[in-house]
Length: 160
DNA sequence: AGTTCGGACCGTT
DNA sequence: AACGGTCCGAACT
Image (cartoon, rainbow, N blue to C red):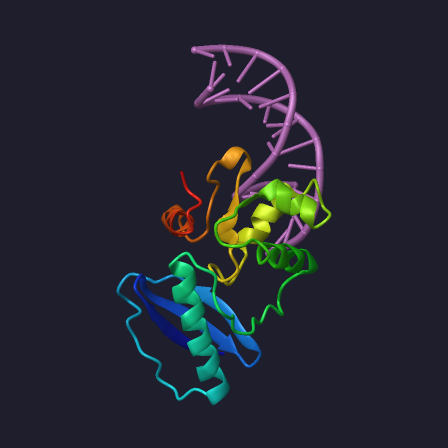
């Protein structure tokens, strides 16, 4: 696994790449991670890193990214795979409820488990778990911190 | 109309 | 066996 940091206007995100693609993305940490990449990265990963940076910046601006890097979700369960791929179908500016996602993947009673799967999403922002709200347009929770969820939704024009 | 409470549901550790 | 980024209806204020 190669770790790199990705500079954006909102801070340096942390990215973990495997030989299969982007495996994890982390929100900027306080001060501590101003480090640069220490090892020389394979060219394929450098390419993915640039793709990730473009996508991330676009998403943080509330837009639709031109292209995503390959995502390495090998460690996901079948249920998580179903949830996460459903999340990727939500375009910027739209939202769904946990129950709606549950229905969409054919497990209408699994709203809570959907929330759990969202919390386990290793690639926030790119896999837009922030677009899932509680019923009645309540904000719901967010593993990355509600500030981020609100900020992302606001920039996509999904917030009152 | 808004809030709180309690039970029900489901996948994960 | 216990815990969640939930949901829904009922009983409140």
